[in-house]
Length: 221
Figure: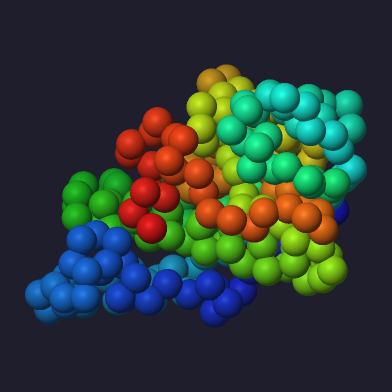
């Protein structure tokens, strides 16, 4: 199980994606914003190295948990329903990378709040596209099976402390990501979680109708 670096060209952010995410929809912002976004994206293209890793194992679904090897991930009933019929489970981590975090830190020192905001948005988009790319590789590795959406601690009240078990299944610091005492990830633009795999799983959508987190970005989709 090796960390994989994603070529930026494979997940490149477009200015239009950023404009849409910050609220412009299909309308272009003024020229100064357009040029600022394009300049930041050019910097990302040169410097960032997004990464992902996943480990696939057999496991068992319980009422409110997923047992994988020696660890029982205490998800909840909602997530276990969404993982129904899975016979294999991929635990994963993905990150925009420490290079991206260094870009953020450099610009934070300038105090330009607009740039700081734009980079925060870009980081979220970047790590999610890295996760999407990872899923295409997982599909290629298991071409005759279906896989669920990816589910992360924090989703549907799955407690963040469960990330310790996910990291233990992948070797403690997957992709160089570390956990704080309160289980926040560094680099901050990182995700981890589980994906179910099997012949009869429901690829489906995220179960937003069951989730109480009104600020979740998935609600925009």
